[in-house]
Image (tube, rainbow, N blue to C red; front, top):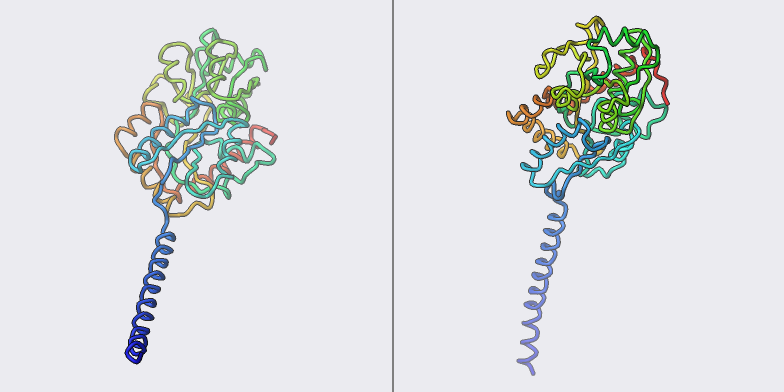
Length: 340
């Protein structure tokens, strides 16, 4: 009995020590597990959607796809275009503004982003506060005044003279109130002192179709979209809103050259996240997008679509947007556009 009692007394510290050691291992494992769980997940860990707030086939899709495809190749996940058209881009833009701040929803849009604050009394989002700029993909040469070949005008001056001879009877199509074609046309009419009738559509494709058919006489269309039809002769190009001629269309003069002194209105395409996305994700996507835009094959692809590559930083793009929103406020006042 004494021996047994002695063995029991001797074994108790060993058992206790082993239990403490095992408990320590368990606590360490739990701590390591918690630390591992606290580490940020690899980004992107799933496909990223790029919301385009216009109908399929709109000009913004060209740069959005060109950059999105390179992002997918480098970052190992799909960057998928999702068209959410309506209300001059505000419906899709609001979807992004309300999206989770996790980096899996991007906005790809055009200068309607800058124009809409001046054209709508109450937007469902704040253009400058509810988004974080990622990069400006490109700038455009400005919209082209194109007409159906049945229209007798063969120059900007002839178009203006025709419009003056029949006030309000010449129609132009656009992708909706506040869209770049609409704003360009309204500014053109104000500068030329003519009256044109606006026919608003729900997207560029459907609007352009009616110009091709002759149902609507004219449109101030994106070179990206209209270039193939100009080349084929299905529409006639009269003039360009930008500051210089397009290398692809060297015979099309600027409005300034055609007599509207000082006329200049260009557009842009860019990428945004909803505000609140972690800064490291914004910087990562910007860095890879800028690399993509700098690639010779991407630059060539954009140039062939009459787009001028940019690839600015989030800070540079943000400063540009501040000025551009103010610019459109001035344009809206000049052309008498009343917020809807």
